[in-house]
Length: 216
Image 1 (cartoon, rainbow, N blue to C red):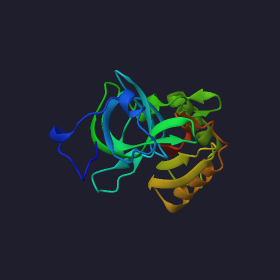
Image 2 (image 1 turned 180 degrees about the vertical axis):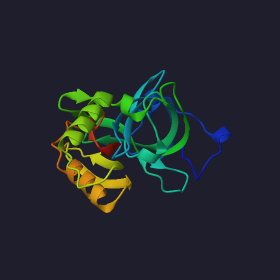
Image 3 (image 1 turned 45 degrees about the horizontal axis):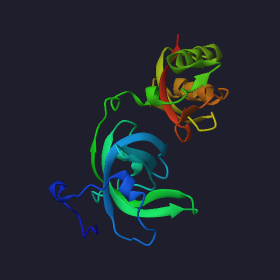
Image 4 (image 1 turned 30 degrees about the vertical axis):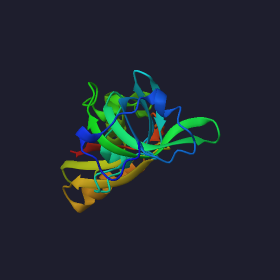
């Protein structure tokens, strides 16, 4: 079924996954498919697997159909969500049947959607062999054991990113005390050894944390 322009939900004709996968490679029409997200393969390329009662389909390069320019990450699609998408049939590399040029028409959050992002990771970031909250506490302990007080008291709140290779990056003060204490807090966090990065469905992911650096 060829779709000419945006359709209201009541005008959609849902094509079963099984039927979509049997389309001809020369068919350039767009079809609407609805199902549950079984796995997000890549948040960078916007690819994921969608399943209905007839089969499972790889959707590659999903776009935002609202015209607001949102990226796949901002669409906030996770495993368990029910989505309705519209796109063309293709066969990648002569073997993989998939939907290309997909546009998101609707999304309904699944039962696990509100689970915090860190709890949906395959592996949490870890420091000195400790992961999650224990890793943060271990890092805070390391920072406090290496900080040098230039003179003064107070707590500097420092935000930083653990990169995809585990390095401590983008260190910045979000709540300072004085120039000297702020500078020392940034210095010691920047000098920290690497972490073991967090892992998502499509590989290592960046994580942002904020910790207090206490001067007594």
